[in-house]
Length: 494
Image (cartoon, rainbow, N blue to C red):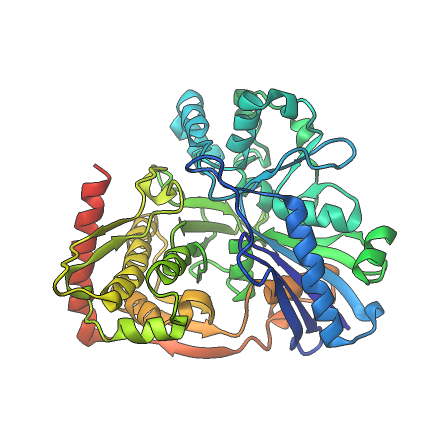
């Protein structure tokens, strides 16, 4: 028996196939091989064509099936992980009405801020757990105000993973976890966020059927199965946003546990059984994948938009001839603190941790006589880690304290500088595992279909690959560098 996991990112779509009984990876692939196109018609905008996700999924899946060479009838179910907060709108024929306004698009922040003021901050926070901010509901409000002809054609709105599930089964559906990430779920009333819908002028009819996160929500349609080379017996049995799914991938499901990731953007995600929110909505609270009203599991999420994208940008600009490994090696020759250079990594749109300010990325302290390429490369990684530290201090103030951080050994966590700096400045032990979002989604599919009887069974073979302890000898140097970085940030956000 086999399980498939799809991870719909903004850079690529990854597909993984695992053998269900052992949990071992059979094959995986991703497309495109270069980063997927993001269209920005104006500064702060970011859009992608949902059909692009689908076409890249088909290419990645075809490669996986060719490599694995298995009987398609053996694939029991599919799980979907997806980039959070995106808006997909379809008409009554399930045709997409416009490109998706994706997670890092900041155009709708002004609408969310206005709603927060009109509804009342305390009412928003105690019911929705967040400011409406720049989330999915606010993006739909932007469409309503700026593209009324398009809005008039909307039958259903979905998150990116809901769209992929609809393409697979033909059914438009969503989840409580997904609705919460769009600020469309009222936790106090355990129902749709009508207080926000009423303010924005939406009917709740645009919300598709709500299904459990872990459950069979449909089977592949005959057309889709033929198109993908799969069986109509294959079920869709799990979907979740990429950060809750990353936590699931690491078996982070219970209060006090912390998961993190550092790809294009970076996230620290802590699980709580209590209603926790930041009064300034700089970190955000969503329903975790295993949340129920009777047994709450809430994910408190710190997101930094400008993480790996800063490292990739520097590679293109100043280190195109170097591999990432060579970049890390060059940066390692520079002392902690990068000899006085500070880089603020906030060049990928408005940052929630900065109260939706879009300050851009800032470089300071550069001396033309002493600084070289290695200083810039190290300062970039330190700046990314220091942005994590800044947000983690906010999380600590609301009761989410990281003593152990779990992550997949991928992306920025492949860099010794990044992980050693994070351990040193946070004081946390970092554990790295052999997993990623697509593998986690495949395991989630096994839970949702009932193949696995428990989460413990699903993650019984999760392997710890590495442990990084804080180096106590370097803590003072990290702290001094962080304080210099923080001073630059405070000047920038005044």
